[in-house]
Image (cartoon, rainbow, N blue to C red):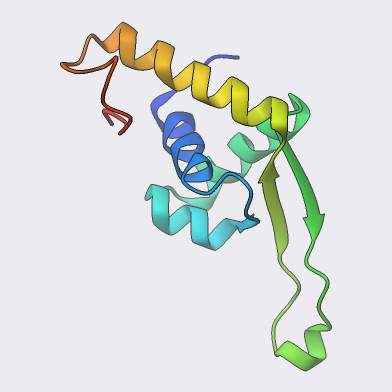
Length: 105
């Protein structure tokens, strides 16, 4: 899979808490991406098997908002995401790329 800078931002945000459920607005704010950029990335990652998605199990009338679609890294996705970000860091040749876990973007 081709990893663009926006995709790398999304992967880094997901890897910050890989076992948690994440929803679109949260990811848009964390990654500073518009919905028109974020949702196609989430779709591609889901199609590749890196993410699983499900609807939040709430009653919209009780919580006063629509149910959210939640995204979570799969075990394969977490492994692939870590590898892809490490390769991207190496390609960018950033100082400390091998030791610094923070993304260079």
